[in-house]
Length: 426
Ligand SMILES: [Mn+2]
Image (cartoon, rainbow, N blue to C red; front, top):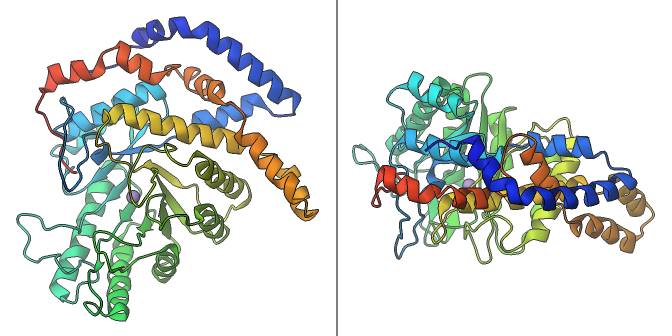
């Protein structure tokens, strides 16, 4: 299904007057405070978030999976789904592939399809957390950290194959998330597991093309519940430093123990020039993979405040790769991705409104109350019409979910692909 621009306009028609009124109100107010609205809108429009190929179908828990029908069963259909929400939002113009599920049969055709949908290929993601049917060696006891050299070699080779696939598609980075760890005390030797991991990552890093980056993700627990080899940002940072200049830490919002101060981690990594990528989601208990901003929108804003500060003041840090890494057990995945995007854009828009000069002055004057006032004044600003305007001026919908529903997208996808079509790669 291809989104017709005239359908977006039809769906927007009754919203335009209200949007205009709300936008003028907030734009005037912000201009009076000295904000350059055109520049703010340009920043919002430039912001593109990648969609992972595994987020386009219903997720699963250990207890069941409830499909939505019309899910994308092929790589081509996954591209089409991302293209569809990109047409509505104008901000989801990149796809993040997961190998081995998304290996293209015809590279030229896939690249052409992506470019016709205005999509680029973001980082590629390897998978050594489960055994593939034709595998010689098992990852039951780990991949890059396995005590068995043959398992490690197989895992390294898989990453090299993924780089090869990514290169053919125009990707420029590899994300490694390891499930390696242990379930019981004594099961693993922490030091040798870390040394094996470092050694394996160095081999992968060494084989990457010169213009590629390596993103190393961390996670404190799960699927192993006693220890994970790359448990926190410090371990990831240490490994990235051991690999070299083009290796970075990747922060996934869900990969922290409850109440971790993620904004401080972001600030530290950007100061050191080592924040490579960012995975958005939200959680209440653990790695819940919920819709971004659904639980802790203020924490998301504080994180964005550090990201904005870092992007403005830390030239030593590369522009981070953004991705929504969520799972949709109950909602229509495409609607959920649009809700996540909205929350990300709102947090970003609010962070752009923080008066950094006044904040710095208040911090220097040790005026704690003023510091909080400055942050919360930005957080409490209703920026929804700014986000709408940034999307609309690029040809997107004022209200993407309304347009999606007006166009009966899910019904059409079920008609095209069938009610039982199930997405691969979850
Ligand atoms: Mn992630």
